[in-house]
Image (tube, rainbow, N blue to C red; front, side, top):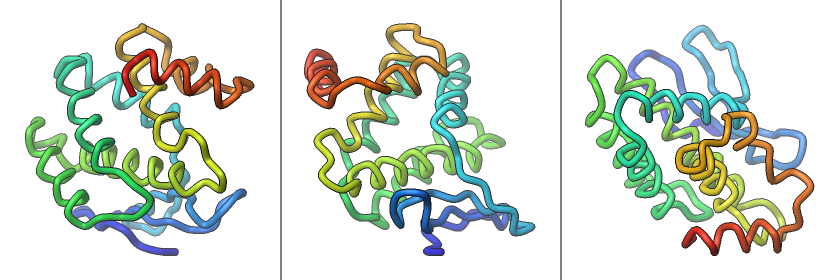
Length: 161
């Protein structure tokens, strides 16, 4: 396991081997329990944040991270995510740091997927659709399944990304 970011509660995020590659994101709790976050898990958290802080703030913070994402982990971006999380209520800042770091790491995974044509845009389209087109969390995380990359690319381009 490659530890990427540790949090003050003793938990951390890491990459390890998954079903497809070595870019599977794991959340490791302080007791050592490891889980793989699902799109629906963090989409739900994003949705709930948008109800409290507003769609534009949450989506804007996500896009700032999205714009800084490429194929490699960047310590500057990890720090930027921590700083961003402090703009939310203090008692939520650790969970928001974990949330946005998880999404950052999953976008890097998408960018590293062999022969990808879409990369991180898949995550952005799902989050955009959930927040601005009122898709359910489940639908936003899954509606692209079975679509060709060209169809998804067209949807992204229509939305400006």
